[in-house]
Image (cartoon, rainbow, N blue to C red):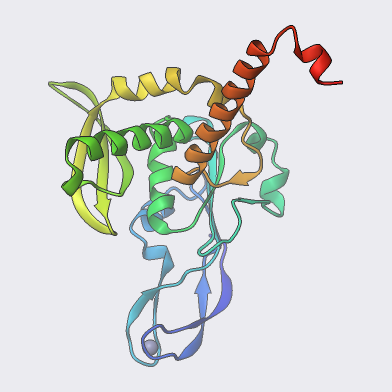
Length: 239
Ligand SMILES: [Zn+2]
């Protein structure tokens, strides 16, 4: 486990102190760290002055080189960018040119990405799946609509294979949703052209990303239609 020194200000009493943080974990070499990341334990610190416990929000790299082909997630709290470069040895490794590298802003998002990639699912498809689920829910029951969904696991029961999502409204946990896995597969097919766009560097793939992709695809479709309609005259019009 790699560690670094960092100074932190207690959110309760304002006391500043030096703490030892863990800027990155590689669960392929240190598998016991996976649980410490998922529980949040790895980010905890205790204030020397008032004794309160809090989360140390520092940039953090989670690396898994084996599970489902390998993936890397970079957590940067309050990151203003949607795409970042990862410095150092990690970036030099050829493996991540073909594997997902993702940027997330908080611990819940980090955990969701871990669960998605470990289940061998595509997080881009999951964002479309969640978006369609939210749209469907709002038309069914507008009063009880979650505003945020997080993938938690895949389960098998008498109803078959299901995707389990945790539902939130204004950061309050509402409960779980169980949806047929077949709906996820439908998204793989219907989202077709979206998946052809390469994801480069370490980028944020979230609801904003899928909304942006859908908008681009729509615009491309309109352009295509306009081209077809204008066929025959366009040769002159463009000159
Ligand atoms: Zn304190």
